[in-house]
Length: 256
Image 1 (cartoon, rainbow, N blue to C red):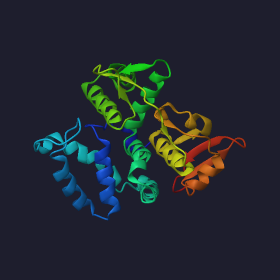
Image 2 (cartoon, rainbow, N blue to C red):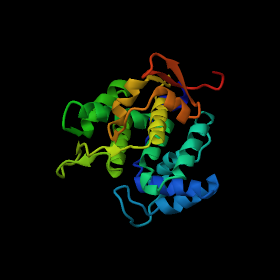
Image 3 (tube, helix red, strand yellow):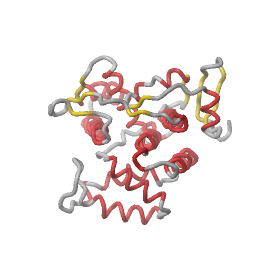
Image 4 (spheres, one colour):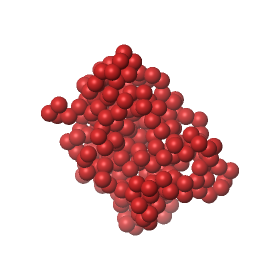
């Protein structure tokens, strides 16, 4: 388990258009310093609820830059995965970037994936959920802390801004599940699964469990064989063979 898995680290809403802006800058070849400077200027007038407003104090948006930096930081354990995401982003249109953003955030900030998992678990039991119900589940792991409640709300509101949650009939804090985001590209499925694997503390999971993982509630993905996942990952994922159609997938370690 890495330090990523120990952090309750999601301290602001991260809107989809902000992720798109960051990824566009990375693909354009800007340096980390240049990207941070451009984001500083851009976010100063961006509202967390959407749209543009009066210039804000950096204290109110600075944490967002930290979250957006997942696209240009250089953690050794994520370098190859980030490179694969960037290569795929360069081949598709911006409108198809959402699952790539999800995978990048899930791998960089596992707390994001864990909130997604509890959202998915709640939707497996009921048609609508509240942010309070998600928090009740998160506090079982992280404790009854204001920081946990606040960061959980930030993830939930981020999912709303991405269209992966919908507000129910204008009721504040109550949500329903929208139509799943359709994934038809096996390469995108592999990248989603790899991002999810990187969010799991031991970075291993049985394929069938991974394909049905509640954290992926917002996506509709088809079956991909374990051998194909290993191939599509360029061997970043290893396979412990169990059968022809399933197996234990894991992130390959440098000394593995």
